[in-house]
Image (cartoon, rainbow, N blue to C red; front, side):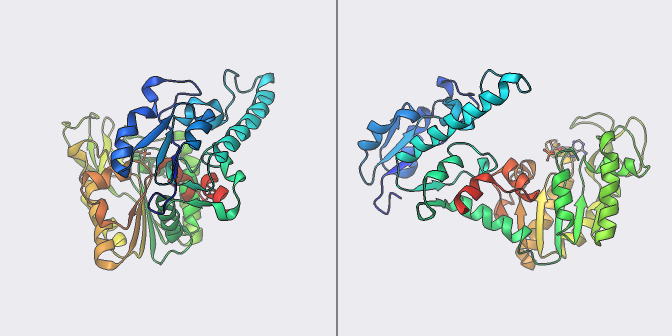
Length: 372
Ligand code: AMP
């Protein structure tokens, strides 16, 4: 915008002030850094809802940063001080929606063009991420460069995948990834499930998992996934062996067990070589790879080997076989960074929750608001 001679107004948020002014979450603290990054002076408007004077004073080539939008309850649009489920809640919600629309309209009035580059909040329908787009016509609203990359990467795996397509889903809980798994079953050729969440699948099939992480209430869902994978011809690859410990600690003694024969008192902490060998073959034979979630407790260096290997295989498939690889959603991003492989995969997503919702097949309000 600046290079093309425009005047730039930036709006964003920090933390969760829940509609209150909290000095420790003021964006005034980042003015210098933003100015250094842009190479122009950056002015600051203390009240995002009343910034007309600062906006009027802005010249082409200059930049203005608005105060943390979340200092206004209207940004998130959730009623404040009213309990969900109480009789007052619905009326308060309705009133807040009107206030949110007014706030979005005010923000929109400052500028001629709206650019949304906040992928990390694209799954939220907030004033500045979605509602504001109602006040611009199609030619005056657009995705920013980061958003465009994220959306293209998601489309590369969900809409235009080259086959074989492999998804690697790890992490701690089936409950948080069930929507992702179900949506992927209609798209992938191979589904690798590892990490803590794999034990629910093993226990559901009658395996002994010792004190490994699992969710009993999700065992029926795990069986449904196994059945659906068979019906749809998806190669579901669960772990076959695991490195276990007797304490949840980096320094705990380690022992390998078959995945369904873990003795009482032991818990699965990392993928064993046998599982990794099988997964390596699948990953290196893939043309599209989506990776979400570590296959072990990678925060402990002594149990990070399996996750590091997966990162290597994904990087190798990308570099040597021309696979498209998308790493997204929280901890797998931390993992590729930990192993220094972020620049060896095709794309590392910047949005945890937004990426997960996109992979679940949900429409992201932040993207939809621009595209409609
Ligand atoms: P998520 O946020 O669901 O992707 O889960 C990431 C977390 O899963 C990381 O903090 C890992 O330490 C944890 N995790 C992965 N494998 C295991 C395991 N076998 N036992 C316990 N936690 C695990």
